[in-house]
Amino acid sequence: AKRKTLIAGAQITNRFTSYLLYIIPHNTNALLEDTMSTKYDIVPSDSAVTGVPMVRIEAPATLSPGFRFDALYDGQTFSVTVPPEGVTKGQMITVPFTPTMKVVEAEPINNRSENILGHWKDGLCDCCKFGCFHPHLWNAWCFPVVLMGQVLTRMKMNWLGDAALEETEWRSAFRNTLYVTIGYFVLRTIFKVPPATLQFVDGHYEKVFPDVPIWKIIIHKVLILTFAIYVLTVLTKLRRAVRAKYSIPEERCLGCEDLCCSLWCTPCTAAQLARQTADYEVQHAQCCTSTGCVPDPSDSTV
Image (tube, rainbow, N blue to C red; front, side, top):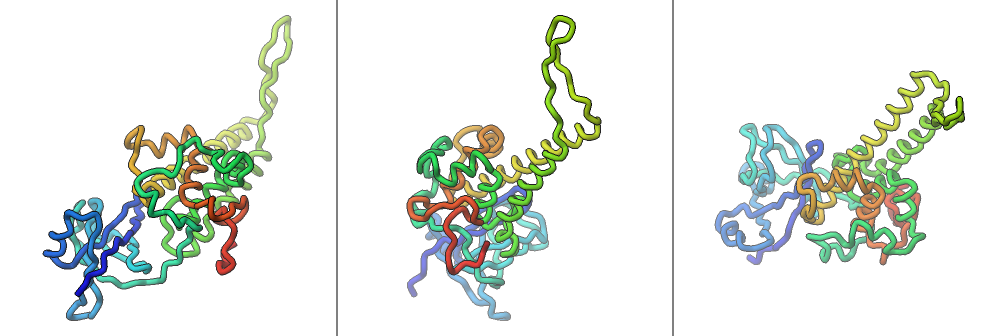
């Protein structure tokens, strides 16, 4: 019988780690035949006892016993549990295909995604590619965390930068990042510390610091540091996940490219991720929707 050639993707969530799994044949001969190919045949085989389809997967990393992750096959997610003996990177394991829910893609239109695998659609500094008044550009420069929340929604990740285990998690990612942004600016205004001023004293200028309680200064500094760490951590994880999804290798600062871009070029990084995960030439962008694009009338997400 003619076999169907497909690639099935899966995301593993273990804090900062995102991987791409490939379901490969439950057939040794087919596996040997396909090792020279860039795609794998999926040949499920029913269990004689339970009747549950079985598929073989290649472990992308060394994982501990009991580790659970969601895999995507034929548009449906199914849970995979690492066996008691654990797995090492590259090891083949056979797992049952028991779909738990139908996956609803959260990504906006990206009709040409098959043409952008392996590389970025544009450069880190191509922020004005769609003009100086494009919504994604204004979000990136004025409210990069809001734009980050929109890309998190497209990638089906929660507001902490991890792959969402439930639909409600990624659907609320934009709302939660918006709350974080609003809360940060409100608290920063409440605990605002006036800057030092230059005053002419005894024939020379010197800095005069305002009379502010030390506890207020500490809260102000901690608030800024906490928000900065949150943005840096989540944006780094998001960029890593986008690179994994589109099979984009690191080009510079190997091993820490995502961190460096997120730290030194936060607005540009958020803007590049937005352009990578949406086709702005096809779909109109908006500043305040959960995905940063015109909402689909059939989608109830707000």
